[in-house]
Image 1 (tube, rainbow, N blue to C red):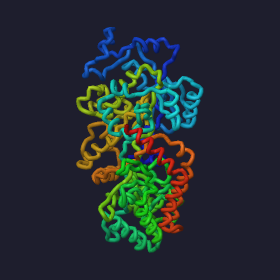
Image 2 (cartoon, rainbow, N blue to C red):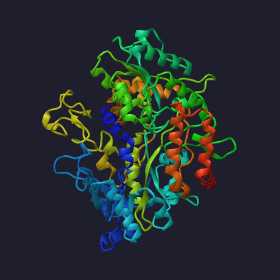
Image 3 (tube, rainbow, N blue to C red):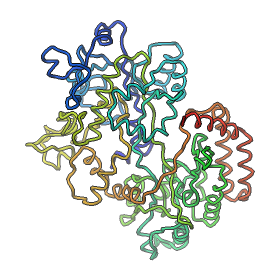
Image 4 (tube, rainbow, N blue to C red):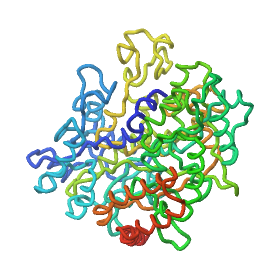
Length: 603
C-alpha cells in the first residue's frame, strides 16, 4: 500500500496517527453552556431530544449508539497541524476546526469541538503543554502528553485516573484490549491507577526475511530455512556473481549496524532470535528488558547469549557477506544497497516489498525480492522482537467533567473500526463509511471507496478533483487521537485475500487491506503463518533517574562495543569486559530501578 511506502520513510503509519496530539476537551469557565453541562447535561437519544425530554443514564443497550448531549457540550482541543503532512485530509475550504465531521458531531451528538491552540511543530506543542504545567495554566481536558510531561502531570495531580471511567463507559471490547496489552501501559500507571489511554500501533510490522528470488533461481538455490542455509546463500550471493555482470560487486546481507541490532528497517532481531529468546537493543537503554525465569528483568544486550549473535555477525563480516560500511549506515542507507541491486537479503517489515525494495526493478525489471519465513537456529529456535505496541497516550485534565461524552464518541469510532456484527455501539449511519462524498461514493446503490475513475464514477462525484481518496484520520481523530487503532486488525482481511485474491472487500478495513500491494499482503501472511511469539520489552515505564543521567553513555558503550567485536577490532572475549563496564557505569543501578518499577507494576 502506498501509504505504508510513503510513511515508512520517516515513521510508520501507526505512529503518524498515534502521535497526533489528541484534540483536547477543555471547558471554558465563562461559558454558561459548559457550566450547565457540568451540572445538568444528560445524554439523550434522538427521540428524547425531539420530544424535549431527557433520557436516563441507563440507556437500553440497543440504543447506546444514539447518544446526544443536550444542552450541547463544548470540547476544545490542541493539535499539531503544519498544513502539509496531512495530505488529502480536507476538502477546499475545510480545516481541522471546521469540516464535515466537526459539524456532524455538533448536529448529531451535541459535541462542539473548539481548539485551544494549533501549532505547526511537535516541539511547539510540547512547549505549550510544559508551560501550562509549570505555570499552573488551564490544561486541555483531553490531550496527548509529550515525553517527561506524562510523569510530571501525574506527580502534579493535574490529570485524571481513568479506571472508573473505563469500567463505566468504555466499549467492552476495548476493555479486553487494555487488559491484553496491560504490560505496555507502564508509562501512564501510578500506584495501581491508569492515567492515560494508549494510541496503539497496528503491531503487524514483525520482521520477515526478504530475499532476491531471481538470484536464488540463477544460482540453483532454495530459500534458506536455517541460519546455516542462510549463511550458504549469503556466501553464494557474495562470491558467485548472482547478477551475472561478471563483476565481484554483490554481497549477501544489507544491514544497518550504526544503531545496533534493532531498528525500524533492516534489523537483525531474526538472527538474534535464532540463538536466544533474549532480545537485544544497544541503541536504547529502555529496551530490550527481558523477563527471566526468576521473575526479574535484565538488559538483553549484556546477556551472555548475545555472544552467539556476535560470533555469527563477526564471521559474516570477516568473509565479506555483509556491507563493510554497515557500521556507519542507518536503515535508509542500508536499504539503498538492496534497492540498487548490490545485496540479496534484507530483514524487515512486510511493507518493504512495496518500498524500498521494489525500487530494484527500476534497474532490472526481472529483479524479485520475495518474503520468506525467518531462519531457525541449530536447535530449531526462531524469534523476532516485538515492536512497541503503543505510540503515545491520551490524558485527561483532572477537572474534566464530560468524560461520558468523550467515551460516547470514542465508542462510536472504535465500533466503526471493530466492525463487529450486532455491536450496540455501532452507528448504522456509518455503515457505508463516515460521510458520503468524502470517504465513499454511492453510485446507483453501489458503495465505492476508491479507484473512482476505474469504477466509472463521474468526475463531479469524486471526493477530490484528482480522483484520489481522502484521508479521514485527521478529522475523525478530533478528541480521540489514535486511541481507536485495534492491534492486528489487518490480520483477518489479509487471511481473506490470501485465500482468495479476487474476493470482494465487505468492510472498510478489508477495503484498506485490498489496496495494499500484492507483495505486502503475501509478506504479512508470511509473518502471521510462521506463528512466532515475539520477544517483548517488559520495561514500559518512564525513564529512570539513572537512565536519564547515564543512558547516552551506556548507549554509546554498547553500540560501539558490538561494532568492535563484529568488525574484529576486539576479540569475542571483550564482550565480558563490556558487560562489566556497562554495569559499573550505571547499568547496575538502572537494573535495580527497572526491577523496582516492574515489581510495583505487577502488583
